[in-house]
Amino acid sequence: MRKIAAPTSYRLLSNFNSAWLLLSLGLSACVIAPPAPYEEYVLARAAVRSAQEVDSARFSTGLYNRAEESYRNGAKSFKDADFKEAKQFFKRAIDYAERAENATRLKKFQSGDSFP
Image (cartoon, rainbow, N blue to C red; front, side, top):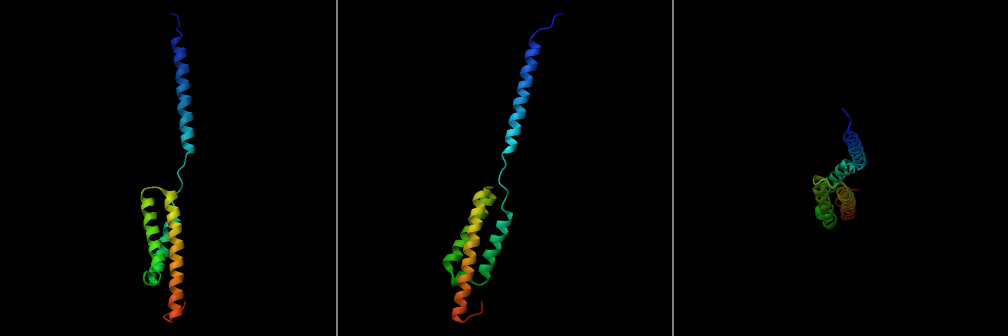
């Protein structure tokens, strides 16, 4: 019986499809999502709690509210797996919370309420 050319072309086509599949899998593996900002999440939570403990909601209302809002937005973005945006919100929350805490301590010191 004679060999037919069809199996050879089928093998070439099969090899081409296999190579294409491996190439596409290899390239898709190169796309990596940014890592989750766990450290920023924890630091933002600690900064907001620290500002809350010194009563920043009463003495530095604007800064404290911005810190809480940024923290909430960061937590929402984190939950939605938008880690790049979450990291930005957490950094902003840390900044606002630290500023609120410092302003509160200064106002308390100036009023004679407590030591810094």
